[in-house]
Structure formats: structure tokens, C-alpha cells
Picture 1: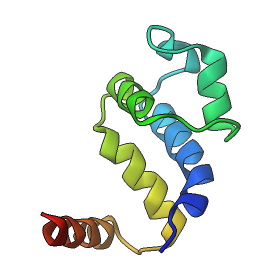
Picture 2: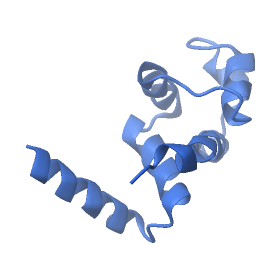
Picture 3: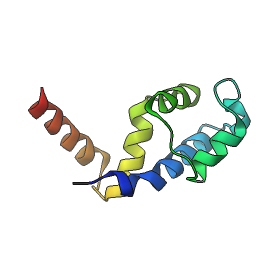
Picture 4: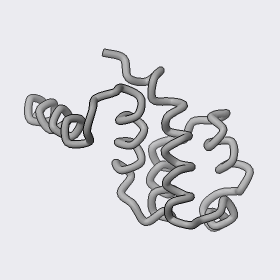
Length: 96
């Protein structure tokens, strides 16, 4: 199943909604990124690398998987976060 195409725009939404819910401005990321870069992520012009997701999450005070989970939760209509995390847990168990 291809999740990438569906999740791209939803990462932008997840980042923006998380930033706003934490009461942060784009300028609050200035220690790790430019306001312009954060803006391009939130407008879905660019996609972040995994290392950038980690840095953004650190500024937001959340785990990087929280941002990714929010993006994929919106992208795939999996229902609840528990359903999505259950699926991920099953897949990891099969792979390890």
C-alpha cells in the first residue's frame, strides 16, 4: 500500500496545527531553521528530511512520530490513532 502520496500534504497540516496548538510562531524555529523554510513546509512546497522532522519535533516538544502519526492519520482515514498505532505495532512485530 502506498502511503507517501496521501501523507505529503497532511504533514504540512500536522506541522502547522501542532505548532499553533503549542502557541508557537514560525519564528520560534529560528534556532533550527528559517521562518521561510517552516513556511514552505507548512504550505507543502517542500518536504522535510527525517533529521529535520526530528529537529522540528524537538522545538514543538513532541516525539517525531507524533508529527508523522498525525500526518498519516489524516491521510489514510484509519479511524482512530489506536487503530493506526495497532497496525504499526503489528507490522513492527512481523519485521522483528
